[in-house]
Length: 430
Image 1: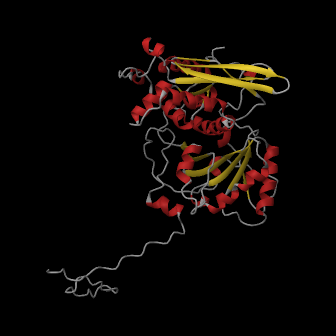
Image 2: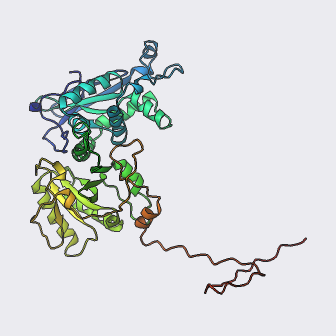
Image 3: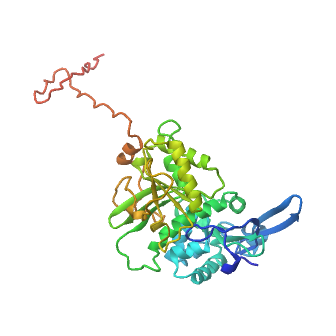
Protein backbone atom coordinates (compact mmCIF):
# COMPACT_ATOMS: atom_id res chain seq x y z
CA UNK A 1 0.00 0.00 0.00
CA UNK A 2 1.26 3.43 -0.86
CA UNK A 3 -1.11 5.49 1.26
CA UNK A 4 -2.30 7.40 -1.80
CA UNK A 5 -5.77 5.92 -2.13
CA UNK A 6 -8.27 5.47 0.64
CA UNK A 7 -9.80 2.09 1.31
CA UNK A 8 -13.53 1.61 0.64
CA UNK A 9 -15.97 2.14 3.45
CA UNK A 10 -16.12 -1.61 4.07
CA UNK A 11 -12.76 -1.42 5.79
CA UNK A 12 -13.98 1.23 8.18
CA UNK A 13 -12.48 4.53 9.29
CA UNK A 14 -10.95 5.66 12.55
CA UNK A 15 -12.77 8.69 13.84
CA UNK A 16 -12.26 10.17 10.42
CA UNK A 17 -15.73 11.27 9.35
CA UNK A 18 -16.56 14.90 8.90
CA UNK A 19 -18.98 14.62 11.83
CA UNK A 20 -16.25 13.32 14.13
CA UNK A 21 -17.85 9.90 14.49
CA UNK A 22 -15.70 6.97 15.57
CA UNK A 23 -15.67 3.32 14.64
CA UNK A 24 -14.34 0.49 16.76
CA UNK A 25 -10.70 -0.10 15.93
CA UNK A 26 -7.36 -0.76 17.47
CA UNK A 27 -4.25 0.85 16.03
CA UNK A 28 -1.35 -1.33 15.01
CA UNK A 29 1.05 0.72 12.94
CA UNK A 30 1.16 3.61 10.55
CA UNK A 31 0.97 2.43 6.96
CA UNK A 32 3.69 3.32 4.46
CA UNK A 33 3.52 6.72 2.86
CA UNK A 34 4.92 7.89 -0.46
CA UNK A 35 5.65 11.57 -0.63
CA UNK A 36 8.12 13.72 -2.51
CA UNK A 37 11.02 14.43 -0.20
CA UNK A 38 9.73 12.58 2.87
CA UNK A 39 9.19 8.85 3.30
CA UNK A 40 7.61 6.93 6.15
CA UNK A 41 7.92 3.24 6.88
CA UNK A 42 6.27 1.09 9.49
CA UNK A 43 6.99 -2.41 10.69
CA UNK A 44 4.72 -4.53 12.84
CA UNK A 45 5.99 -7.06 15.36
CA UNK A 46 3.46 -9.36 16.94
CA UNK A 47 4.11 -11.03 20.26
CA UNK A 48 1.17 -12.93 21.76
CA UNK A 49 2.41 -12.19 25.26
CA UNK A 50 3.45 -8.57 24.90
CA UNK A 51 0.74 -7.56 22.44
CA UNK A 52 1.33 -5.58 19.27
CA UNK A 53 4.06 -3.00 18.87
CA UNK A 54 4.65 -0.30 16.30
CA UNK A 55 7.86 1.07 14.92
CA UNK A 56 7.73 4.24 12.87
CA UNK A 57 10.62 5.76 10.97
CA UNK A 58 10.57 8.89 8.88
CA UNK A 59 13.35 10.00 6.59
CA UNK A 60 13.63 13.29 4.80
CA UNK A 61 15.34 13.04 1.42
CA UNK A 62 15.85 16.79 1.27
CA UNK A 63 18.11 16.61 4.30
CA UNK A 64 20.54 14.06 2.82
CA UNK A 65 23.36 14.69 0.42
CA UNK A 66 21.89 12.31 -2.14
CA UNK A 67 18.57 14.14 -2.00
CA UNK A 68 20.30 17.45 -2.53
CA UNK A 69 22.28 16.12 -5.49
CA UNK A 70 19.12 14.89 -7.19
CA UNK A 71 17.23 18.10 -6.57
CA UNK A 72 14.77 16.75 -4.02
CA UNK A 73 15.59 19.39 -1.43
CA UNK A 74 13.23 22.29 -0.95
CA UNK A 75 15.96 24.75 -0.11
CA UNK A 76 19.41 23.51 -1.10
CA UNK A 77 22.69 25.34 -1.29
CA UNK A 78 21.11 28.76 -0.84
CA UNK A 79 18.84 28.34 -3.88
CA UNK A 80 15.17 28.80 -2.87
CA UNK A 81 12.37 26.98 -4.59
CA UNK A 82 9.08 28.82 -4.11
CA UNK A 83 7.68 27.82 -7.50
CA UNK A 84 5.20 25.25 -6.12
CA UNK A 85 3.56 27.96 -3.99
CA UNK A 86 2.48 29.83 -7.12
CA UNK A 87 1.09 26.67 -8.70
CA UNK A 88 -1.34 26.24 -5.82
CA UNK A 89 -5.00 27.19 -6.03
CA UNK A 90 -6.70 29.35 -3.42
CA UNK A 91 -8.38 26.18 -2.19
CA UNK A 92 -4.98 24.55 -1.70
CA UNK A 93 -3.65 27.48 0.28
CA UNK A 94 -6.70 27.50 2.54
CA UNK A 95 -6.16 23.81 3.19
CA UNK A 96 -2.48 24.29 4.01
CA UNK A 97 -3.25 27.09 6.45
CA UNK A 98 -5.86 24.90 8.14
CA UNK A 99 -3.40 22.03 8.44
CA UNK A 100 -0.77 24.38 9.81
CA UNK A 101 -3.17 25.35 12.59
CA UNK A 102 -5.12 22.13 13.22
CA UNK A 103 -2.27 19.71 12.34
CA UNK A 104 -4.16 16.77 10.82
CA UNK A 105 -7.33 16.13 8.80
CA UNK A 106 -8.76 13.01 7.17
CA UNK A 107 -9.75 12.73 3.52
CA UNK A 108 -13.47 12.93 4.35
CA UNK A 109 -12.95 16.02 6.47
CA UNK A 110 -11.00 17.76 3.70
CA UNK A 111 -13.67 16.78 1.17
CA UNK A 112 -16.35 18.29 3.41
CA UNK A 113 -14.35 21.53 3.67
CA UNK A 114 -13.32 22.19 0.08
CA UNK A 115 -14.58 19.64 -2.47
CA UNK A 116 -17.80 18.39 -4.02
CA UNK A 117 -16.94 14.71 -3.58
CA UNK A 118 -14.45 12.43 -1.88
CA UNK A 119 -13.06 11.25 -5.24
CA UNK A 120 -12.21 14.80 -6.30
CA UNK A 121 -10.52 15.35 -2.95
CA UNK A 122 -8.46 12.17 -3.36
CA UNK A 123 -7.26 13.22 -6.82
CA UNK A 124 -6.16 16.66 -5.68
CA UNK A 125 -4.59 15.42 -2.46
CA UNK A 126 -2.52 12.94 -4.47
CA UNK A 127 -1.15 15.78 -6.59
CA UNK A 128 -0.34 17.83 -3.52
CA UNK A 129 1.57 14.89 -2.07
CA UNK A 130 3.53 14.54 -5.29
CA UNK A 131 4.43 18.23 -5.01
CA UNK A 132 5.70 17.66 -1.47
CA UNK A 133 2.97 19.86 0.02
CA UNK A 134 1.28 17.12 2.04
CA UNK A 135 2.36 14.17 4.12
CA UNK A 136 -0.06 11.25 4.56
CA UNK A 137 -0.20 8.17 6.77
CA UNK A 138 -2.65 5.48 7.80
CA UNK A 139 -3.09 2.92 10.56
CA UNK A 140 -3.61 -0.80 10.14
CA UNK A 141 -6.69 -2.22 11.86
CA UNK A 142 -7.24 -5.55 13.52
CA UNK A 143 -9.25 -7.76 11.22
CA UNK A 144 -7.75 -6.25 8.09
CA UNK A 145 -7.95 -2.93 6.32
CA UNK A 146 -6.65 0.46 7.31
CA UNK A 147 -7.95 3.69 8.70
CA UNK A 148 -8.69 6.63 6.47
CA UNK A 149 -5.70 8.50 5.19
CA UNK A 150 -4.64 11.31 7.52
CA UNK A 151 -3.04 14.39 5.98
CA UNK A 152 -0.69 16.91 7.47
CA UNK A 153 1.83 19.45 6.19
CA UNK A 154 4.75 18.26 4.11
CA UNK A 155 8.13 19.84 4.54
CA UNK A 156 7.77 21.98 1.41
CA UNK A 157 4.52 23.58 2.59
CA UNK A 158 5.87 24.04 6.12
CA UNK A 159 8.76 26.06 4.72
CA UNK A 160 6.57 28.11 2.38
CA UNK A 161 4.01 28.97 5.05
CA UNK A 162 6.81 30.07 7.33
CA UNK A 163 8.15 32.25 4.51
CA UNK A 164 4.70 33.75 3.89
CA UNK A 165 4.49 34.68 7.59
CA UNK A 166 8.08 35.89 7.82
CA UNK A 167 8.86 33.19 10.37
CA UNK A 168 11.86 30.92 10.78
CA UNK A 169 11.18 27.63 8.98
CA UNK A 170 11.69 24.27 10.69
CA UNK A 171 14.70 22.16 9.91
CA UNK A 172 14.11 18.87 8.07
CA UNK A 173 14.99 16.92 11.20
CA UNK A 174 12.63 18.97 13.38
CA UNK A 175 9.80 18.57 10.88
CA UNK A 176 10.37 14.82 10.63
CA UNK A 177 10.31 14.57 14.43
CA UNK A 178 7.01 16.47 14.57
CA UNK A 179 5.51 14.02 12.06
CA UNK A 180 6.65 11.07 14.14
CA UNK A 181 5.12 12.56 17.27
CA UNK A 182 1.87 13.33 15.49
CA UNK A 183 1.52 9.87 13.93
CA UNK A 184 2.33 8.10 17.21
CA UNK A 185 0.49 10.49 19.53
CA UNK A 186 -1.97 8.78 21.92
CA UNK A 187 -4.26 11.79 21.52
CA UNK A 188 -4.41 11.59 17.71
CA UNK A 189 -7.94 10.15 17.64
CA UNK A 190 -9.14 12.84 20.02
CA UNK A 191 -7.62 15.54 17.82
CA UNK A 192 -9.18 14.01 14.70
CA UNK A 193 -12.56 13.83 16.42
CA UNK A 194 -12.51 17.47 17.50
CA UNK A 195 -11.37 18.54 14.02
CA UNK A 196 -14.16 16.41 12.53
CA UNK A 197 -16.72 18.21 14.69
CA UNK A 198 -15.66 21.60 13.33
CA UNK A 199 -15.22 20.26 9.79
CA UNK A 200 -18.85 19.13 9.82
CA UNK A 201 -19.89 22.67 10.74
CA UNK A 202 -17.54 24.27 8.21
CA UNK A 203 -19.04 22.02 5.49
CA UNK A 204 -22.06 24.37 5.44
CA UNK A 205 -19.72 27.03 4.01
CA UNK A 206 -17.96 24.78 1.51
CA UNK A 207 -17.13 27.18 -1.38
CA UNK A 208 -17.25 24.32 -3.90
CA UNK A 209 -20.85 23.52 -2.98
CA UNK A 210 -22.01 27.03 -2.06
CA UNK A 211 -20.08 29.36 -4.40
CA UNK A 212 -22.69 32.14 -4.47
CA UNK A 213 -23.02 32.71 -0.74
CA UNK A 214 -22.58 36.45 -0.29
CA UNK A 215 -23.60 36.65 3.38
CA UNK A 216 -21.12 35.14 5.81
CA UNK A 217 -22.99 32.57 7.89
CA UNK A 218 -22.27 29.22 9.42
CA UNK A 219 -18.97 28.59 11.19
CA UNK A 220 -17.30 31.99 11.45
CA UNK A 221 -14.70 31.12 14.10
CA UNK A 222 -12.66 27.98 14.59
CA UNK A 223 -9.88 27.99 17.16
CA UNK A 224 -7.82 24.88 17.82
CA UNK A 225 -6.89 23.57 21.25
CA UNK A 226 -3.47 25.16 20.90
CA UNK A 227 -4.92 28.55 20.01
CA UNK A 228 -7.42 28.31 22.86
CA UNK A 229 -4.54 27.67 25.23
CA UNK A 230 -2.74 30.73 23.88
CA UNK A 231 -5.82 32.93 24.19
CA UNK A 232 -7.56 31.72 27.36
CA UNK A 233 -4.62 30.37 29.38
CA UNK A 234 -4.00 33.93 30.46
CA UNK A 235 -2.98 33.87 34.08
CA UNK A 236 -2.53 31.23 36.79
CA UNK A 237 -4.25 33.53 39.29
CA UNK A 238 -6.98 35.62 37.66
CA UNK A 239 -8.97 34.41 35.90
CA UNK A 240 -8.63 30.65 36.25
CA UNK A 241 -7.12 29.32 33.01
CA UNK A 242 -9.11 26.90 30.86
CA UNK A 243 -8.09 24.65 28.01
CA UNK A 244 -11.07 23.59 25.87
CA UNK A 245 -10.76 21.28 22.87
CA UNK A 246 -11.88 24.08 20.61
CA UNK A 247 -13.71 27.39 20.48
CA UNK A 248 -16.12 28.42 17.76
CA UNK A 249 -18.87 30.74 16.62
CA UNK A 250 -21.95 29.67 14.67
CA UNK A 251 -24.03 32.32 12.90
CA UNK A 252 -27.44 31.73 11.38
CA UNK A 253 -30.53 33.91 10.82
CA UNK A 254 -29.07 36.85 12.72
CA UNK A 255 -28.10 34.77 15.75
CA UNK A 256 -24.52 34.32 16.89
CA UNK A 257 -23.75 31.40 19.21
CA UNK A 258 -20.22 31.23 20.59
CA UNK A 259 -19.19 28.05 22.34
CA UNK A 260 -16.41 26.15 24.08
CA UNK A 261 -16.17 22.52 22.97
CA UNK A 262 -15.36 19.59 25.24
CA UNK A 263 -15.01 16.55 22.97
CA UNK A 264 -15.33 13.31 24.92
CA UNK A 265 -14.17 9.98 23.48
CA UNK A 266 -15.08 7.91 26.53
CA UNK A 267 -11.51 7.32 27.69
CA UNK A 268 -11.95 9.51 30.79
CA UNK A 269 -14.27 8.85 33.69
CA UNK A 270 -17.34 11.03 34.02
CA UNK A 271 -15.98 12.36 37.28
CA UNK A 272 -12.89 13.59 35.43
CA UNK A 273 -15.07 15.18 32.75
CA UNK A 274 -17.27 17.01 35.26
CA UNK A 275 -14.25 18.15 37.27
CA UNK A 276 -13.46 20.55 34.42
CA UNK A 277 -16.54 22.55 35.43
CA UNK A 278 -14.64 24.06 38.33
CA UNK A 279 -12.28 25.88 35.99
CA UNK A 280 -15.10 26.96 33.69
CA UNK A 281 -17.04 28.35 36.65
CA UNK A 282 -14.02 30.31 37.87
CA UNK A 283 -13.32 31.60 34.38
CA UNK A 284 -15.76 34.23 32.97
CA UNK A 285 -17.10 31.60 30.57
CA UNK A 286 -20.54 33.19 30.30
CA UNK A 287 -18.93 36.33 28.90
CA UNK A 288 -17.48 34.41 25.95
CA UNK A 289 -19.83 31.56 25.10
CA UNK A 290 -21.66 28.46 26.23
CA UNK A 291 -20.06 25.16 27.23
CA UNK A 292 -20.89 22.23 24.92
CA UNK A 293 -20.17 18.58 25.64
CA UNK A 294 -20.05 16.23 22.64
CA UNK A 295 -19.95 12.60 23.79
CA UNK A 296 -19.85 9.43 21.73
CA UNK A 297 -23.34 8.08 22.47
CA UNK A 298 -26.73 8.96 23.92
CA UNK A 299 -26.10 6.52 26.75
CA UNK A 300 -22.89 8.34 27.64
CA UNK A 301 -24.83 11.62 27.46
CA UNK A 302 -27.35 10.34 30.01
CA UNK A 303 -24.51 9.37 32.34
CA UNK A 304 -22.91 12.77 31.85
CA UNK A 305 -26.10 14.61 32.74
CA UNK A 306 -26.41 12.48 35.88
CA UNK A 307 -22.81 13.29 36.81
CA UNK A 308 -23.51 17.00 36.24
CA UNK A 309 -26.48 16.85 38.60
CA UNK A 310 -24.40 15.11 41.24
CA UNK A 311 -21.57 17.62 40.88
CA UNK A 312 -23.69 20.79 40.74
CA UNK A 313 -26.82 19.78 42.63
CA UNK A 314 -29.60 22.34 42.46
CA UNK A 315 -27.30 25.33 42.31
CA UNK A 316 -26.96 27.59 39.31
CA UNK A 317 -23.69 26.73 37.53
CA UNK A 318 -23.28 30.32 36.30
CA UNK A 319 -22.93 29.27 32.66
CA UNK A 320 -24.96 27.63 29.90
CA UNK A 321 -24.32 23.91 29.38
CA UNK A 322 -25.47 21.90 26.35
CA UNK A 323 -24.91 18.19 25.66
CA UNK A 324 -25.25 15.83 22.70
CA UNK A 325 -24.44 12.27 21.69
CA UNK A 326 -22.72 11.73 18.38
CA UNK A 327 -24.92 8.76 17.53
CA UNK A 328 -27.83 11.20 17.11
CA UNK A 329 -27.54 11.45 13.34
CA UNK A 330 -28.89 14.43 11.42
CA UNK A 331 -28.34 15.74 7.90
CA UNK A 332 -27.04 19.02 9.33
CA UNK A 333 -24.59 17.27 11.62
CA UNK A 334 -23.76 19.17 14.83
CA UNK A 335 -25.72 22.16 13.50
CA UNK A 336 -28.96 20.15 13.57
CA UNK A 337 -31.46 19.56 16.40
CA UNK A 338 -29.17 17.38 18.50
CA UNK A 339 -28.44 19.64 21.48
CA UNK A 340 -30.06 19.49 24.90
CA UNK A 341 -29.67 22.22 27.50
CA UNK A 342 -28.76 21.13 31.00
CA UNK A 343 -30.26 22.91 34.00
CA UNK A 344 -30.56 22.01 37.64
CA UNK A 345 -34.25 21.20 37.11
CA UNK A 346 -33.91 19.34 33.81
CA UNK A 347 -32.72 16.10 35.37
CA UNK A 348 -31.24 13.26 33.36
CA UNK A 349 -34.06 13.05 30.82
CA UNK A 350 -33.81 15.11 27.66
CA UNK A 351 -37.10 16.84 26.98
CA UNK A 352 -36.21 18.89 23.91
CA UNK A 353 -33.49 18.91 21.27
CA UNK A 354 -32.43 22.24 19.80
CA UNK A 355 -30.56 23.36 16.71
CA UNK A 356 -27.16 24.87 17.32
CA UNK A 357 -28.46 28.25 16.19
CA UNK A 358 -31.26 28.09 18.79
CA UNK A 359 -28.93 27.76 21.77
CA UNK A 360 -28.53 30.84 23.99
CA UNK A 361 -26.28 33.59 22.68
CA UNK A 362 -23.26 34.48 24.74
CA UNK A 363 -20.05 36.33 24.05
CA UNK A 364 -19.17 39.54 22.22
CA UNK A 365 -20.81 40.72 19.01
CA UNK A 366 -18.13 42.24 16.86
CA UNK A 367 -18.06 43.17 13.20
CA UNK A 368 -16.64 40.66 10.78
CA UNK A 369 -13.12 41.25 9.60
CA UNK A 370 -11.08 39.50 6.91
CA UNK A 371 -9.28 36.46 8.23
CA UNK A 372 -5.51 36.92 8.28
CA UNK A 373 -4.40 33.68 6.66
CA UNK A 374 -6.71 31.43 8.68
CA UNK A 375 -10.10 30.43 7.18
CA UNK A 376 -13.30 30.39 9.21
CA UNK A 377 -12.22 33.19 11.54
CA UNK A 378 -14.20 36.22 10.41
CA UNK A 379 -15.74 36.55 13.88
CA UNK A 380 -12.45 36.10 15.74
CA UNK A 381 -11.46 38.73 18.28
CA UNK A 382 -8.35 40.04 19.94
CA UNK A 383 -8.16 39.43 23.67
CA UNK A 384 -6.10 42.59 24.09
CA UNK A 385 -8.94 44.79 22.86
CA UNK A 386 -10.70 46.95 25.46
CA UNK A 387 -14.10 45.25 25.11
CA UNK A 388 -12.66 41.75 25.36
CA UNK A 389 -10.35 42.73 28.22
CA UNK A 390 -13.36 43.95 30.22
CA UNK A 391 -15.07 40.60 29.65
CA UNK A 392 -11.95 38.67 30.58
CA UNK A 393 -11.42 40.63 33.80
CA UNK A 394 -14.97 41.64 34.86
CA UNK A 395 -13.96 42.23 38.49
CA UNK A 396 -10.84 44.21 37.74
CA UNK A 397 -11.08 47.67 39.42
CA UNK A 398 -11.03 50.62 37.11
CA UNK A 399 -7.98 52.84 37.25
CA UNK A 400 -8.73 56.09 39.12
CA UNK A 401 -9.01 59.22 37.02
CA UNK A 402 -5.93 61.39 37.64
CA UNK A 403 -6.55 64.79 39.18
CA UNK A 404 -5.95 67.80 36.93
CA UNK A 405 -2.52 69.33 37.23
CA UNK A 406 -2.23 73.08 37.71
CA UNK A 407 0.68 75.38 38.26
CA UNK A 408 0.74 77.67 41.33
CA UNK A 409 -0.23 80.78 39.38
CA UNK A 410 -3.17 79.07 37.65
CA UNK A 411 -6.68 80.02 38.91
CA UNK A 412 -9.27 77.28 39.67
CA UNK A 413 -11.96 76.65 37.09
CA UNK A 414 -15.38 77.33 38.67
CA UNK A 415 -17.10 75.13 36.07
CA UNK A 416 -15.60 72.00 37.66
CA UNK A 417 -16.40 70.78 41.14
CA UNK A 418 -13.16 68.90 41.61
CA UNK A 419 -10.43 71.53 41.77
CA UNK A 420 -7.82 69.54 43.62
CA UNK A 421 -4.57 71.38 43.32
CA UNK A 422 -1.39 69.44 42.70
CA UNK A 423 1.44 71.81 43.37
CA UNK A 424 4.39 71.68 41.01
CA UNK A 425 7.39 73.42 42.55
CA UNK A 426 9.11 76.08 40.44
CA UNK A 427 12.36 75.01 38.80
CA UNK A 428 15.61 75.70 40.57
CA UNK A 429 17.58 78.63 39.32
CA UNK A 430 20.92 77.23 40.46
